[in-house]
Image 1 (cartoon, rainbow, N blue to C red):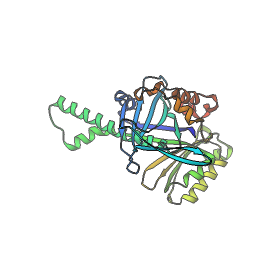
Image 2 (image 1 turned 90 degrees about the horizontal axis):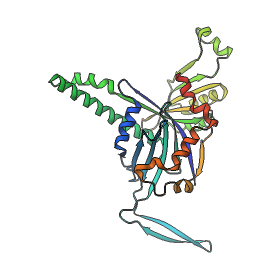
Image 3 (image 1 turned 45 degrees about the horizontal axis):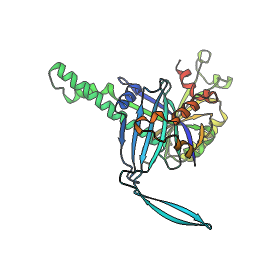
Image 4 (image 1 turned 135 degrees about the vertical axis):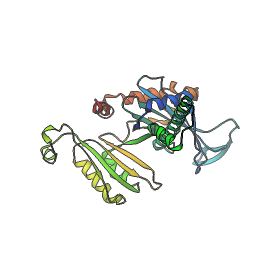
Length: 321
């Protein structure tokens, strides 16, 4: 079985708080229990570290499977003989997913294999814990201000004081443009399409106000027919393949009303592929609380820093200069 390294991007917005403050606070506790998956009974645990590496936040998701038995079998004359193994009470079947996030750009890599926790679950986890963190910081600030002023604020006054602590986490999967049409068909709505041109061709300049003064051009399209998935997916994919774009972002919505941004790049399907058994061996004798000591972290960082992917992982940093 293969284990693949997928790309993702995180954008964090808040008037008072920063993503670094969020991850640092979460790392102080270290271990965070996430809600149990009701469909499987499996539980997930998020581990984070913000100070082991100067360039990257490091993380791991452990999925604890809700089962007390597993089957193995011996093959003889082309037939299987089942053997059912009972787990001891303290034994658990675990799945592991490592990830890294570049502190400067918010771009990262996620290690995933078949039927393990998806990268989108990581995005949901970060949004969940960001909300808890924002609320905690806001309430602490309000309590301090009430104590300083020796009075209890009204509900409207508290609401105003909370406002600067509101935060928004945008978690995007990096998508290869050739796979875009296929991916978009999985969603219920396509809400908007934002893109930036790599170069301003004469044709683009002709349609650009103040063209003589423009260095970069970014456009945002919002759709009045967001449920026309087939038509929009085909049109967007066709445009992306024909236009010379520096980057792109599409906001989509699933059947449950969850909104996801998808980022488009000229990139491979996966940034690296490793044998699952070989990666699992790199966890031998590793404590979950010291997950960052595994060589899996080194492999993720090595892939991220590869010259082959400079045009992706260095691009966001250059855009902000």
